[in-house]
Length: 511
Ligand SMILES: [Zn+2]
Image 1 (cartoon, rainbow, N blue to C red):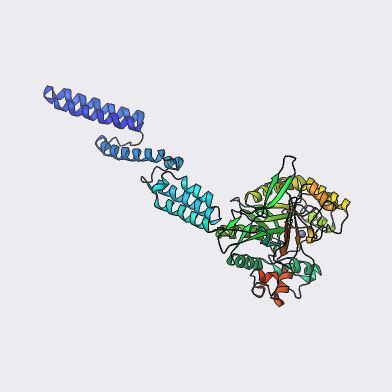
Image 2: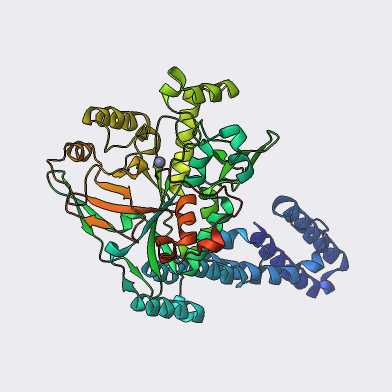
């Protein structure tokens, strides 16, 4: 519209000049013409204008040329496939400015992909910039990524350690209150680490060059024509020299009803859509923040993207009997509660099973999108080596019917208490528990063994791996023995162990 207006305006002006040359034909005629032109201009402004309401005709041509220059510059921007939307929207940025900003934004995205060791994706991202061959920063980035990629070495999945934590102690004074919790304190003292201890472990592992990979990054899973799954070591997991892969898992993200004070109470999404923890303070006030490993890891990896291989975080092992993520999603919790569960229900009289399930599904989806995987940790958290096959079947069916619908299917089983269903030799079909679990889709198994840095079996029909518990007990042992896995992981127990813990820390089983 404005172009039509300006074009016609120029034409009218020429027409006006022409008429002025004919002034000898009559001053009155000229005056009439000028009046007509003025009326025409006013009419155009009225019909198509709106940009300028001062009616200052003599000023218009200067604005016209400026506007035309800017319009044509914007037309070029619009033709740039890099980011047409932004070019169209950005009416005020001088020509070239938004284009540079777009190039930089794409280069930043590529840098993040490369920082997380996905060099091919980073290079593809740079090449998506139109005319990248002419942009020095782009060609330099590609050269850098090619060089770093060429320097990478293959990770041997058989030598990758696997560590795990339980939920973190926010307030040790509240958690270790023996007058309130009696001998239960010994359990939490052995199984858990404090937020302070956790932060030191995570920072030290990063400083040692450890990079979190998913458990599923260690193997390649294929399904044959008969629908049978096969597993093989992944030989194409590559990291730069000096970087070491490590697997992370986190147990029991249920915030059990029996937990003492001083722990987070549930996973929630804040207004910005970030996963956070709800925590009940000393005076009953509800706070939302980084009160457990999930938001703390998210924050750490955001600040240190190279701590994660392609966005991997960890595997979250879930039980069922008290629900998931602090949501009471199990029917038995309400229909047949233990004394701890009954006390919890009394404190939360408005909580309804159906609402909890719906909310937990939203949280589960957000956690998956955030880079975490889920595993079964059994429904009832009993040692599978001691329990009967019938018990195992009932328990597994409960997990599959009450937890899997919320978090999705998984082929990973993390044994409760670390208690394996077999010895060190290979599983075979004579092992009834293995045969049953395999028939239910579980093919990746994790026990607990903190006596060595790594132990695993990559077999055609299953994968098995041991895990190292990083907790009060292993840190306490490492205080007086500098030869445990804690120091083999490069962790300094003297610096990490919270001296306010009750000692000695008594063994209570792990996982
Ligand atoms: Zn557990």
